[in-house]
Image: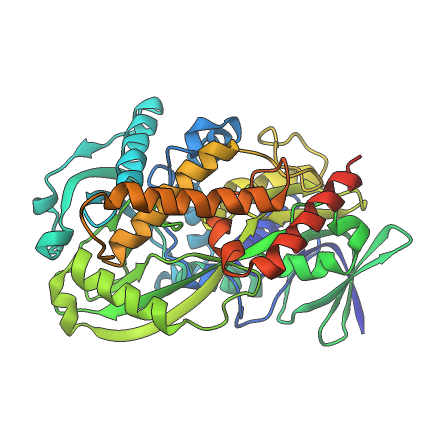
Length: 483
């Protein structure tokens, strides 16, 4: 069985559906397919807290590099599109399915972390000022629904009134409902087995069920699932920074204690996005905090992350969560490129496009990236200058020494959050020396000019026998592929 489309979008998460919608909106004559398994087994979107986090995601290392500042600029631009984007969806939905953006984010700087949290909190304020975004310092003790343990209390806090969240589950359901009524958009609930590329010419895709979807354009927006499709075409894959999974776990709790009516989050820390609590209703709250760079996507939540999140909820958010009930666990996988930068735009295979590698920012950026992708496919003026073309050598956003110092701070934050106990006398110097040696030895072992982001180091250090030779060969291959 085969069908023909103008554009086939591989991936049915927030980016995939947004791209399909943007294409149909830009040219209603197009015939578009969105392909992906209905249960999205390893996707990022279903497990996402869906924080529309422009400023809360800012870190000190991010704004030190030109590429990092460009990512912030894209996030700022995306933030101004969400009201209109949601209004457009709501206009096509019945009242009970309509979406709501819950505005307001508290960023707390608590004392169960380390220096990296202080630095990133300061960077958030500097970026708010740069963009003249409204914000205010607030008394942490006055934040409604926040009652942490005394040794986990925040020392500082700020409120960003325009930054908030949208329910990711409702967003995906809204895309599905709107697509189901479209005469020009077909949702194919199946995975993609392979890209159909013959003699360097794109023909379309073949699904796991054997259906051939022909198309003159294919957009790879399948998150971490994109890497498996690229690996079937080695000459192409070795020209593109490799994707890894940023596996994470979240929990939805039903609580008797008051729930903060706005997002509450820490700055990014501990190789992750920081602790965050996102209100889902008057009685339920989403809690997330974890991130593990891994080659194998998470398919189910693991016990250690579950335990950690519950500790975080009780210690750092509200002690009354000891009586909360578990609604559900979720796990998902953010697509993380080996340089931490997105992969956006056309490839050397005519008609094959990529829209992935967005790490923690994909859902928030989706209205901007989707509309820009639609314009590029249609040959129209793009919305921004793209610095993140898929076929490139890995981008260095840090020097080796900067990466090592940043990694030490992340390791410190991990220790604090897990309540590491070590001798007080001289412990800080000893701890830093130990992890500086760990980080330096990993970077030395890779023997590359490319500086891999520090959040990759735990994965490498845990299995050096595999990852050191793998990455050495990878770096040699990608350098050779680009001459």
